Amino acid sequence: MNSRSTLLGAVLLLAGVVGLALLPGFVGGYGLSMAINFLMFAILATSWAMFSGPSGYVSLATVAFFGIGAYTVAVLGEQLPWGAVLLLAAGIAFVVALLVGLSTLRLRGVYFVIFSFGLAELIRQVVNWYESTQAGSVGRYVFLDITQEQIVWQLTAVLALLFIVGWLIERSRVGFALRMIGDDETVALHCGVNITLIKVLVFSLSAAFMALVGAIVAPRWTYLDPSIAFNPNISFQVLIMALLGGARRLYGPLLGVIPMVLLFEYLSSNFPHLFSILLGITFLAIVYMVPHGVAGLIDSYVQRYRERFPGRRVGKNQQKESAL
Image (cartoon, rainbow, N blue to C red):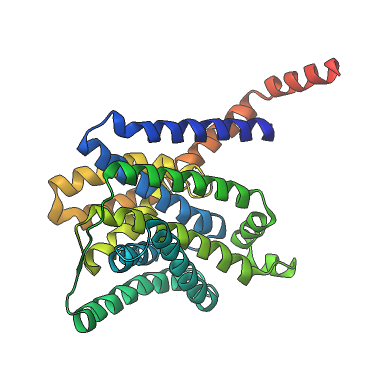
């Protein structure tokens, strides 16, 4: 059964990559813009869930690493080859997450949530101070010859890589240890799990993917400043999407990204001054009505079906045994 699921997942991933790679040839400018939004939030929400889903650590630092990637491009985009800039953006975010994680992942519950939100705000203020006092301007212009089609292709490649990495982690000892930490950190510690190493490693890896997204998307904006790169709404949007889809499953965030991107696009276009309020209301509604996400609902329906029709599974097993 596991081999069948793996094969099905590989086929779906390949089909999705091919479809997204061919998409720019069939849609216009608005379609490409929406595709970039879908891919951007799909990577951010999936990388968030890769750490926060199994561990139970709710992070609001997504935009901190996203902004680091965007500003790496703003500062070094015209001085280094594009591939080197992307690697540098991911590397800087990985190191920052590593240093922050060593000191903060000892916190749990609401304390970690508050600190992660404060981290994003701290980085934003530091960048804002440096730009205004040292660089002489609050923002920077980004002039890179990168089209929307190329952004779609690059984000598609990152999303495929993220699913491969997430799948490998999920089925490795690291993933098993991370789930133990989420269930009971004390038990995991007594079982010999190096909880600090596991948490910091996966947290830093997810931060690197978030920075990659920020770096790839940065050329969309001709002008970039801290309020754009470190917009706190991004962290809350990613959290809502991951919770709606189901953060306990690797594919879960995708189920939340599609409806939420459409909803946020509608709200930002028609209610720009009430967007933050409506965002909060959406968050409360999702937590109250779909606490385990869409993936959780699917799992519960599958479980009910198995409990209601146990004979069908037994029948299949008996047929296999008789054939043997």
